[in-house]
Length: 470
Ligand code: SF4
Image 1: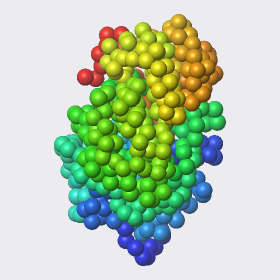
Image 2: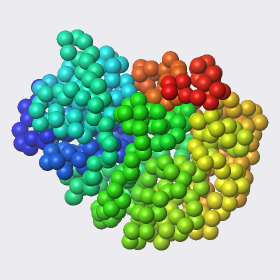
Image 3: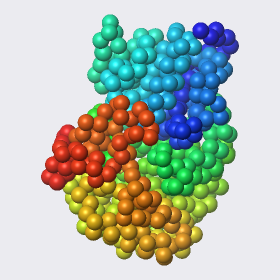
Image 4: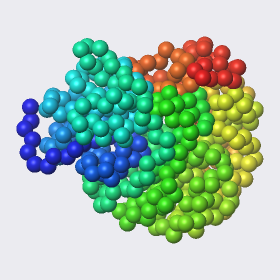
């Protein structure tokens, strides 16, 4: 057991990474963890977020950080399923180093697989806080007693699951803590991580482009109105995991203040991956209030092509932009069907709308990333050909759009890499895929005609256009 001297941090958070074949990737800090860290700071609780980037062995890193910060509690973020293995290793090693420090798990995947993690991990006194963690965690830090809302733990060899009684009705007002080095450990190293922008381990060298230097994921809100069949962050998943039944944005002034300060703190690219409404009123309001920033914007357009009004504002307020967009398939018929059955991303836009949009981006000197999906339920050979044709057309006409070569053979299809079937996605919920399937990043189930075909229940519900769990 290590003896700790020095600072007594209230809670030390670990953000895991994917460790695969000795390489480390996908170590972005989740927005939920940033929001939690900000909230704790505002309420007087000292915390630090440590991101693992593979410069040393995971266990050595955990030991170094525990020695450095001497925390009263350890928090492990298990938002993304590909971190299952490394999150558990972090917790197990922390317990080995000092069994007196309570370990808390949180995040989407931990919340959804709480029972399975408690059964599997063999980590004594592990507490999982499900859903929104802000108030339950503060209660835990304040009293030392496991709160009786939103928690799962083992007592007398039995798993106790308290009800999800803390659900954020509105998002708490938070702003990033300054200096940010008091919130994020090794901030400069975090900004330079420059990793491949994919979480699919075997495709790291082939798919996607790298994260930009100085890139930061901006926390804007929580929730989604869609239920994409592969996604664990959709409307029903939010309801099941955290009880959230509406989309919530942060206060626009808080987001503006964070952007302005983050530019001072060397952020060069803001990545916004939150676009629940096609009207984009929040972003129009934010952009109108924002002064011009010495940074780029990367915007993930869940709701399809962005209006020229918003593009003009982005042009005025940022030093360039990249729009990430996925029509999912080149087949307009299939795209419409997915939307009408409740598994797509409304509103519908045609292939021509998309091509015109890329033209508008080109005129402004903006970039785009256009990606498609392999293994869509009920996708036919004809649909795949339509995707191939659209991908070729995009490539031929727009050099500003990043799209990889599309191949009719799914395993060679780099333009539409196979997606993971995420925990709590409509597809996972109607299949037999469980927690243990997510433990090895290389073996995580991916979307394919075979995996969709194996879930006969899912095939049944998708053809009816109704989610099996609602
Ligand atoms: S993939 Fe679909 S369900 Fe998931 S967050 Fe994006 S729009 Fe929502």
